[in-house]
Amino acid sequence: MKKMQLQKFTEFANQLLPHETAYLLSVQQFEDVEKLDILKLVDYNCRNIDQFTPYDTGTDKRKYSHLKNWIQDRLQEKDVDHHYKWMLETEKKIMTDAIEWPDEKQLLKAIKHYEHPSFYFSRFYELLLLYRHFLLIRLRYPDYEVVHAFLEHYKADYEFSRQIGERLNRATNDIVRQYSGASTTSAKWESWLEEVFFDEKLEGIKRHMALIRLTFISFNYRKYDMLREKYDYLDQQLMQGKYYSKRLLVNYYINRLLLHSRFKEYETAAFFGYLSIREKTHDYILYVNNLCDVLLKLKKYQQAMELMRQAAPEMRNSQNMFNRVSFVAYYMGALNKNGLYKNAEGYGNTFLRAYAKDVLEHRWHLFFTYLFEALLNIGHFENLLRLVKKYDLLARDRIYQRRSGYQPNIPAAYFLAQYKEGNLDMSAARASLEELASLAGYDTADGGLKIFSSDIRHLAPEIFPFGS
Image (cartoon, rainbow, N blue to C red; front, top):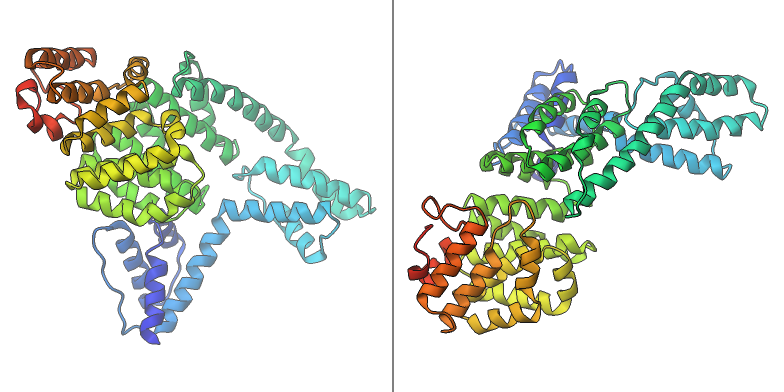
């Protein structure tokens, strides 16, 4: 029984995140040294994800139980999403005349102890607008005056926040459309979004939205340096328990992964990636895909394959086809890097037969890059050429060339397959690959064609005179 209790605590502690434990250490006032030592070890294990230090089984198990309850209570108090759910439940009770006095006492207490700006200030304000009407129609003047005073005091802040929200919507349209390849510009929003993000008088949700949009802009223009200061600032805010929820934390971690990946700081990126998947949020598969990409770049191929195998059941339940196509692509990549080319080909072709339309709509370039790598390595050159023709991939690739960071994986695989099938001689195949390298902006004298040539050049080294 004792072993099971400690096992449960260990499982609970393993789900905690470093910013959570940092906040807990900053607010704890334990007089019990053993409890503090346990909390410090929990924090240590959170930060050292590649190892685990067991908890002392000689310590009174009741202390572990008490500490677990204390952690849950402290985090729930700061959890902005928990607060949001409470507001939704309270609104429903008001709208259906089902609110009872204990609910009202909690709402009036929230007004009394309110600290501006809260993360969901606008939502709280709108809840009180409904409550004010509820009170007035029932002639409950004393409570009405309390609510009315709050609403009048923060009326200007609410209106300002609404204006910010409307402008954020306009900015989002430009930013996302450019990210998706449309001929729009989003740089004009950068300075304004920075003002919004650093405005500590604004509610947290608007500031969070501004940061996400700044992140998109940085990717649109490959200006990653603009993000470091902002994410370092956010890091300190989260350490203090501000704007906390599990969901927001893992979103922060995946954005750190993306940021460090852009600077090729892959070990740091992987650290944040593993933190991002401790909680299975709505975007879990998206986070798994990003982590797999980093692990492949680190050449941690076995870890990448194991990650994808464990996440496969979650992928099958996902309704987001962008994430599902990406998952299949990266899983093929992991299988390829572990030499399981036939497995990758079977997995990819099965998915393609069932979801060809979705593949062509989402991440087709990534999908066919890894599928073609498998086909080339098992010698299915004719099948590769058939797929290129069936889905008109060369025409698609010519359009895709406009994208920032374009890599000519698809035509390179096509020319290699043509060469292996005897449709191109060596000089023509070599010239075609050199032209692709030039098109993509690579210097053939310095690194060469930086596609997946390192994994397929052994098939025809005579036409890959550059790269390794």
